[in-house]
Image 1: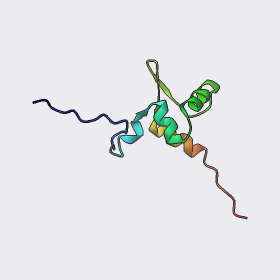
Image 2 (image 1 turned 90 degrees about the vertical axis):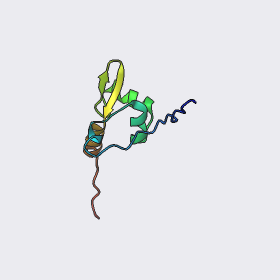
Image 3 (image 1 turned 30 degrees about the vertical axis):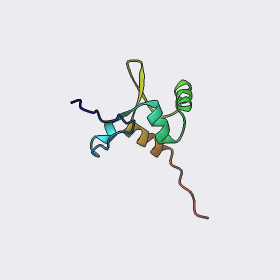
Length: 81
């Protein structure tokens, strides 16, 4: 009798809150999180813009906590009239 393997998913597993800030995301996951495209992230990297990233060998990775900080730095508050 052959065992069936569980289907592979591209969705990340839910992680405990204390682990999530250290999770490394690839450009596709990061683009989805930020609501942009991987090509835009590549342009930002080439132009010195965008969130901080790290290289793991030839791979580009984004740390979730750095994405949160980068977004927080771009918060714009509105003034009441």
